[in-house]
Image 1 (cartoon, rainbow, N blue to C red):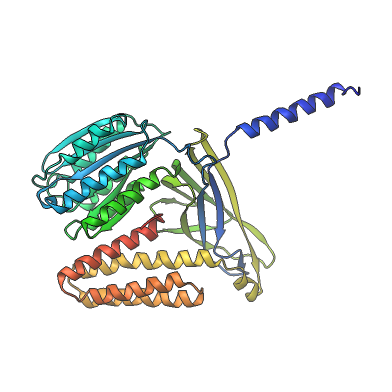
Image 2 (image 1 turned 180 degrees about the vertical axis):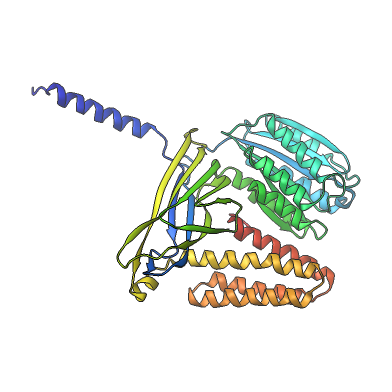
Length: 446
């Protein structure tokens, strides 16, 4: 029998060990993709371009092995919820529990002018008890929304773990009128909770709630936001919300970007973030398997000679992988090239990035339109919606995007609704905010 020499034997053992370890180690659950709007820039002159930083959540290798969940249901029981609204809310909450396992953590918090913990944070061993308590809920007084969310967060903190999906699901049909009640105050609470890996999803029921408040709370914590016009929609909303909880593959996402060789970041489109000179930092609370979330940055580029290649930006991403249970790190550098050939520059355009740019620019116009309408300037609001529709239609035709054309039609509907009676506009305003939120945060369901 042939005998391996010692060095070859050592190499063989090392290779075998490496293969064994690589097979045993879970694959990273997030893919980093850098997509410049143009890979080729016009030579010898400054220009503006965009960089799309995409984080793609990969489907879990074993779907049945999802991350454990720690969820707080925060339910408005104020007087306006009496009757059909509260009945459907209770049914939806019971149905949502079917998405949870016995070892998941659940708590239920009720609020009107006071806050009560109906079910303290506990493992879901005694389902009949929790369901019975949910069925017993009765409507009460006013709406201490801030205190209700804060108490839900306190229950989540009892089992807070970066290896769990930590989320509060808030349902309200009314205005916050007890305690802190401005959109800015709720946004501050959302930021605080997001920094603790707690996301807040907000469900606005009917036409009486404050959509600005609900959107800011959800956005600052990177949760979801849904407008449910009718109580019978709640079952579907809760079904989708709890369905996404089981698909979270990463959380605590920190994005650091260094722009290189004179490239200068101008602004972030859609999401929150901070620009300090040539550096940018942003965060996302959670990444879902099978979905993409992105950060879109506008960049001013310096002139370069034809044929030259330069780095655009170096991107580093750190996140808690809920399957490997490790803090993972990804790094890539995006590069661009200069050319004096206008056709080559045009041919390098990335259609999907430009569609995202058009969507985000259009979504930003909603803020201006709504502010004008809120001040009573109907004509001004209509003009902004009209300009938005024209932008989306123009870019939809240029980029052959049906999605942009559909959004253009929705903007024309908002333009008409701005001059309609208050009740009709109230509904349209909530729909505008919901669609804006979906686009800005790449929400995975409607």
